[in-house]
Image (tube, rainbow, N blue to C red; front, side, top):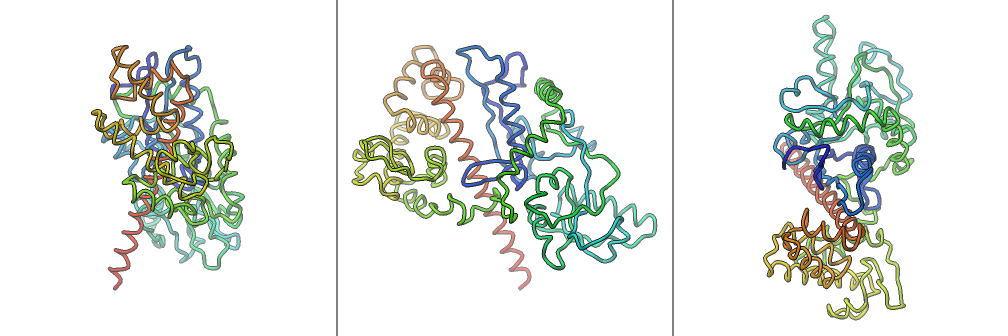
Length: 440
């Protein structure tokens, strides 16, 4: 993708965002998080002053594990990386950072029963942090300083890669809970959901937090810095306030690495998976559409309008061979068959797999006939009728307004979040299985 031009920004900006219970997570099937809240504000900033008829600039979120943020950025998988990223002087030869949105500090955190103001006062208590994390790097630096002074080494327990700090915070009420290291931002966000966690002491040095970009993308850095300068310190404070309401008081946040049965997505997962197998669809796409259409609440309408979990039109359901569109499983089956039908039509017309996804979602929202009309309009205007981004998308924006375009972007964001969550869950499962096998 070409470098970002602040005066003529692209319609799409790919953002790599760290999966995590603070940064980007799922609650009742929808994505939330402090980074998402801040990035959403940046998206609004980019669209301020856009003229009527101009397509809106969209951020396309690509959730990845925190350890993958900078490697994925350098590999060109996104233009912007966000995830409570410390500005690292050692990485400035490879990436560039925005101005800091906060100067933070690393703090050693423990149960309220623990009283310690220095590492020396911790004695033999272990400190648990994810391996290869910034927290572990900070602890290693503190340990090296202590060794140089002739002090005993720190008792550091490296958790598996991909583990999160937040579950440790909410577990501080348990006896013999391990200590950990968290940013003050995380402690502020989790202050109500993890009331037993207490900051024992913090490092002296400030930790600048910012967003990262490719070295040659100075235009994007200029745009991001103008946004951050205009927002000031209130940006993160607002993001914390917006996100805190999605953290349960008992600390069981719906993290993006755990799609549990207590989550609405988990409740309907078996039905989605059954239909997906029967129609050769991705069950996570079905789930993403259900989240957008009904937030997993099966609104039943008997007046002939869209109904059920997937908000399927009864006429469409009948055309797909479904007798009772109000039944949950039949409702999902109608949607699955309709999407499979749309995919087959699009692929036979030469549309790529990637673009078929956009067109399927758009046709699901506005109807197959409307989508075909928009594609014909795109061809008449010299645009590619088989491409969505920058082509049929522009026609849709000018012809039917932002409703369809917003719908496609929203479902795609949710779908990507679900896919990333499942991939991360699978990696964690494989890591746990490997560890268990090694113990045997």
